[in-house]
Length: 275
Image 1 (cartoon, rainbow, N blue to C red):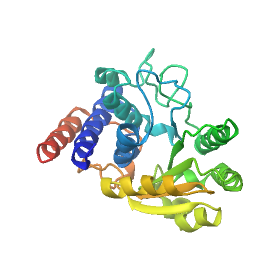
Image 2: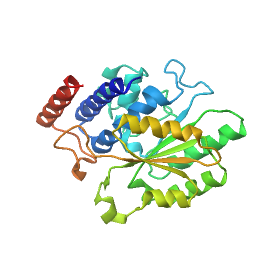
Image 3: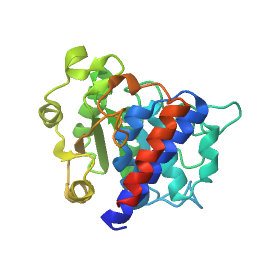
Image 4: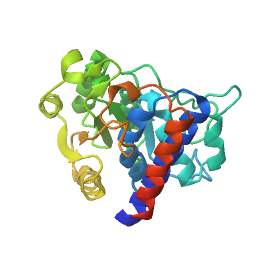
């Protein structure tokens, strides 16, 4: 896809996030919106996946370590054709395949059930090691929140990944600077994130997480790295795309009301017209 096509797709993903969380009257739109370009690029361009055969053995794997941002992943999956977009409106409802956190038992295309922060990267590391042991060439991607990397398990997994030279693993950190309790550097600062991952033996790439040129170059660079895992630290804006949500920690875990939803969707419609 061209960058222009990706931008249009990302705008549709954002609409899906707003619509689904509004329908559920709960959820986590802020961090879903900040990671929208990453979700879009992974599902529409980067990963070797097939919605018609979601369990194919040689598929690339994706683990949403920050599982609460499932609305973003679901919206990208709907755009990729895993299920009808109307199903997004069943988010968090009883009997829905789209629960508040991803569940691999219910939704084909979800490679790992996640939600407990810090654990997803460990699962991804295990998958990457499994590919090496089975002599398969699929790649494994995992998306973490910057608040999530305050968890110690993240660094145990990072140490293991580097020790095992898992160059088929790409960790993406959604560095939007905010977590549920406020600014990450005031809650428990993980900075400097790049130097920490470098110290753990990762190849480090810093990018603007809303720039598809930068995203494309980063993932292409990651494919060229041998003998060590890669981390892409994506600087983003929480709530990106909706003016009253941008940079506001309060939108970490609450849905828009009817009036706010109308405003948000109008803004996104306007953005779409200008693309």
